[in-house]
Image (cartoon, rainbow, N blue to C red; front, top):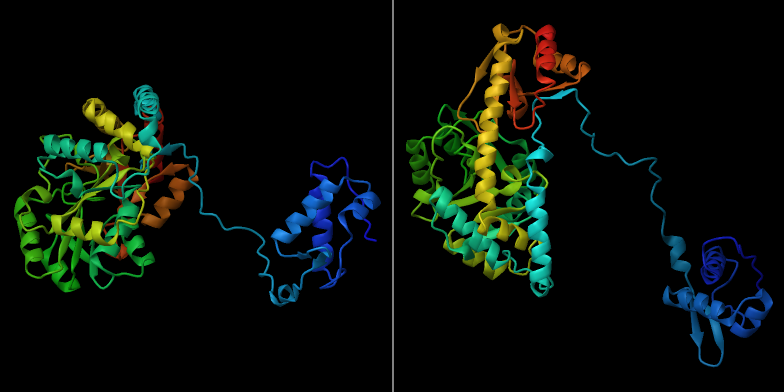
Length: 464
């Protein structure tokens, strides 16, 4: 009879140990196909365990297909010869994880949210109230476009802040703009030619590439994406950020916006994806009207996110679809579940409806205005002041820093990294980096540590 030695000091239950012993013997060929296993009573007596232990082990083996039972005859070993035909995968020594962000002495190009600026106490209060008052609603699956109260709150915010009169049913909520880009690819079609700005936000092109979409670059001039660039690319979809372009900071004038709308109207199937990612933080003057608000031909798809206005880890974004595309979405893609939890959706809806979002935006605009002034003042009195030029284009939370040096960008980056200074070169955002002006870097001041900035500027001055 089969004999096994149990480890009574192990945390593993006896039936699990017995299950593993028998399983190993079956896989190893010690127990042959069709061979009868001992009866539960005799086996329990032989091993000095309870019949429940034997029964549980046999039950697990049966559920996984290693043994089978015949009424009034007992338990038998299954034929698992097919397992021998399955080759194990080649062993991989380690997992190649993405490079983690370094712990810089001074991160001058990062866009992390300063935890001191997030309204944790208000958010926690609203979350508690939501859990207390909406326990029933929280257990109901969210509609594919997001819960109606949040879409209503967003529509109200867009009307008061961006001058957009939007039906809540045209708003689709999703976990991050990257997710929404993927949804648009399915909605608009994979047979389209998508055009991205050059220079531009790299992740957009990476998403199109990973989806095996035909995407092309279009050059920009001082007013933004050019019509010639779109024509040369033979584009169907123009993906742009007209209110505040990243990384140049250019704001597209109304004349160019109407030129783009005219381009979209020249042919059926053409659309403009308007990425309005940080329009809340235009620090000089009133917010620029969105392209969606002047579009009368249903050619503009508006996208925005709360990642910039609240926190980069919030991961709640939304898009406003033209009526015919909203109908197409609900007709063909309503089987998708909303990717944002109902807990967060209801909390954010209250945050907007009860006026906390507007207060937060106003507070952060004042904070960023002061932060920008302090950073600029710090540069003006630093050793770097005569060796650089600040380039501002109403550029939201960043501006460009041009350094006067003969060193290449690659050499500058090497020296910065050696001194634990993080600066992103403008050339990084060009399709052809060699075409970009060298020695120009992006300085994001939203979360700069002002206490370390003077020393960081001294180091940059020494480096160049």
